[in-house]
Length: 93
Image (cartoon, rainbow, N blue to C red):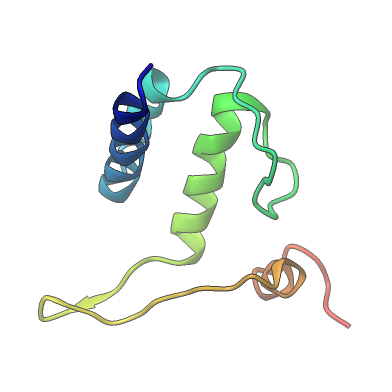
């Protein structure tokens, strides 16, 4: 694949995710996909199935809210331990 084809693939991946189209992952993500920085969700399956699970969990935990055609919320957090505590995946201290 060329650099431009790789860029197009990644762009399409995120476009389909933005649409909530997990079915597109079957043609965009290899079945044996390896995530070297997996999301902090315990119990994810490996490969493509894990990618789908991670997005389903994230969408359930952080549904986007729109008000009159405007963005109303944004979640961003690099504190993965704190994030897992907020989701109730691990107990807090």
